Length: 107
Image (tube, rainbow, N blue to C red; front, side, top):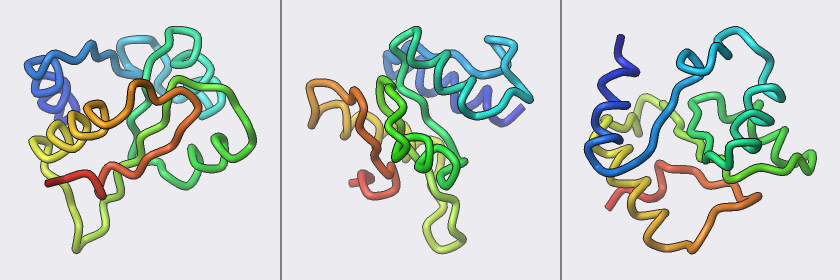
């Protein structure tokens, strides 16, 4: 499973990571996933940008939403995802109720 490679890299970088599969949330609707992340004060990282941007814009409370876009000209490797996340976290004291596009943080 490809997601496990990303989980291993994030964990090795010191991040506490769980997946929707770990939480038995696969197949659940996005508001349920976001509410669970919020209840555990977890930042949600997703490739599902449009739907989670809409949830964020609706005013749903959360610990932070980080979008990863997979456009053919700007596909991020897993190592770039980890580096970009570290860059965001180094720049903000917390991400509560904020939304960030991870692709912009690779440097």
